[in-house]
Length: 143
Image 1: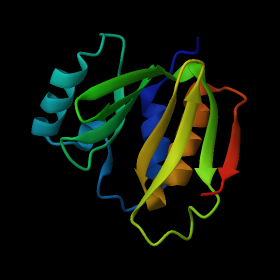
Image 2: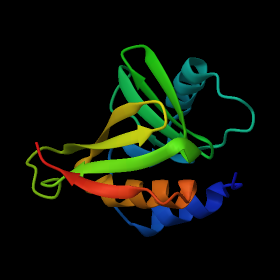
Image 3: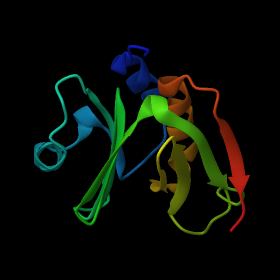
Image 4: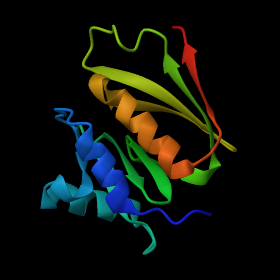
């Protein structure tokens, strides 16, 4: 298993220069949001929080150096980044009128629909590719 340097991931995110409202580096979140997430996840010490999408208290996700953590209406799911085998995106993701989009993450044991800010999909996928270093495919998926 690769040891992820979170500062490299943070630098990739910053270099994207995207103006995002709900997707932020962990160190840019408010103390209240950090506390809420930490209380819900109870992450192990080896997890370093890197990027978080936080539109509200009912739905959010977090990328750490080891996991993708999703929280949806009190249901929490941990996916090991090294278990991610495939990512699917909607073929019209660039042209959707909504400010939100979805990417679909597949691992050995589960599939999750990940809500993202429309303009963030390229950097989120690039970061997942970098962190996992897997040979997974990105497939356009039609509605």
